[in-house]
Image (tube, rainbow, N blue to C red):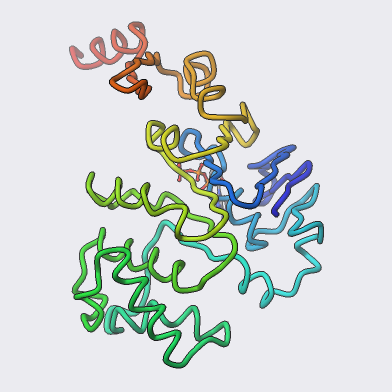
Length: 261
Ligand SMILES: Nc1ncnc2c1ncn2[C@@H]1O[C@H](COP(=O)(O)OP(=O)(O)OP(=O)(O)O)[C@@H](O)[C@H]1O
């Protein structure tokens, strides 16, 4: 279990996270949403111990992350970042295997895990391709396969859907609970967050604006304020709720006025 208590993060003189309290319960999917620059990626990195906290504490099963050896964090927590890197000359299967090998895994059973992870993201037939020959969305799926092959207890995913088409986005949503027992996911797609998350944390300007179930927090009273838009919730077929957004009329007028200049 990861918990954060009163966490603050500073970059130079600027505090980008303040007073963050959070509990990621085992067996749940926690979503982190919020506007650009609200601190979502920074919070995810703080939960991995990759960003030093300037106040408060992040605990992994009750132990201050600063006292947990890096190797032991890496064995238990996998991270899928926004930027899909990797050596373009490396074969896809080797890229997926790398994180596991660094954690002492290997052999035939691990080769099978790598193959199964690539199958799970629909890239089984690209195992021998060079990374550099893959599209942005395919590379993003390689990163997800790497997290699956790691077999970590907790996976932290930073906007894993930003390169994915609608089909692969839905596939990721469907397989999310198979990636790891506990998942923390940063998302911009609020409908997707409502669909996949047990618990949603809304960040605004480095603070928790709201936290709770999607039904409790992904509501106009919270989102209008945080995003500065007008939100309408509609109840679709089978009770599925969806969100529609529009700019407030005065903002639209302002843009129209600028266009006429
Ligand atoms: N290494 C850094 N040095 C200085 N400032 C940073 C650094 N990393 C992030 N920031 C700043 O911290 C703030 C929060 O950034 P962060 O990437 O956590 O936001 P985010 O909510 O993930 O944004 P986005 O939705 O645009 O990805 C931003 O204003 C950003 O410029």
